[in-house]
Image (cartoon, rainbow, N blue to C red; front, side, top):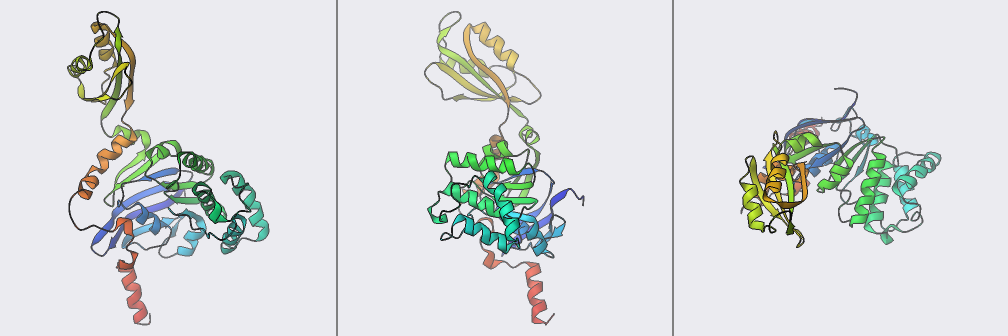
Length: 360
C-alpha cells in the first residue's frame, strides 16, 4: 500500500444479524484528497465511518487509516483522525473554550500547544465571538463549528465528517462547507452528506454506495459522464416571434421531439414569457446546431440554448434507484446504517469472546 494512501478499505463487510450493511467494499483515499461519500439512507455510509473511526469492527475485510489497522491498532488510528459524527459530541453545560481545552487534554496536548492550536481553530472555524459562551446557548451552526474545532484540536492529518451540515439553515450550511474547503487544503477529508451540491462545491471526487456496495468511485466529471446522456435546455418566447405568430407549448414540443437524436424531453416551469424544455441526447452527439436551425426555420425567438452534462443528482438517482424501489416495498424494516450495534455478531467479536472464556 502506497504511503500516500491515508484511508484504505479492502473487501470490507459488516453484518448485523442477518442484515448485511456492507458487502465487500473497496476504496482508497489519498493524501490531500477531499472525497464525498454519498448514498441513500441505509446504504452503509455511517457504518463505514464507524468502522474507520474504530467505533465498531468489521465482520470481514481490512480497513486501515494512515497505515494502521482499525482492529489491531485502534489507538494509533484515533490519534491520526478527527471525527465529527452527525450529532457533534458536545457537553451542553460547558463553555466553548473549556470544552475544547477538555478535548485537548483528552488528546494529550499541553496548555502551550493547546493555546497555539486554538489560534488557528478560532480563525478557521469562526469561534472568536462564542469562546466564553455556554454551548447550550449556541445555534446549530455554531455547535457544528465547535464540533469541527474538537475534530481539529490535535491537528490530525485525516478528517472524517458524517453529515456535518444536517439540521442547519442554508447560511449555516454554506459557512460549514466553506470551513471544510479551507481545512481541506492541508488534510485528507472523507465527507458524508446527502447534499450533492455540497459535494460539487467541496470535493473533486465522490464515492457512491448503495445497498452496502460501491456503485461509483471517481472524479465528479467521470461520474456525471456515466449516464451516457447529455442535457439540453431550450427556451423560446411565447409572446413574440421573428416571423409569424408566437408558438404554443404544444407546437414547440412537437417540433423538438421530431428531431433525430432526442431521447426524451420534458417541459420546465417558467414565467409566462417563455416555453422552456429539457432535452436528453446521446453523450457523443451535439444537438445544438440542429436545435438552432429548427428555431430559425420556424421563425421563433430563441431566448436560451445550452448543453450540460447530466447533473450529479441525476446520476445519483440512476445509480441508487434500486434502493429506493426496495424501500417502497412492504417488508420487514432493516436497521438503518448499523444502528443495531447491540446485535453485532461479528466473527472477530465472537473470536475475542471465545478467547476470553478460555483464558486466552
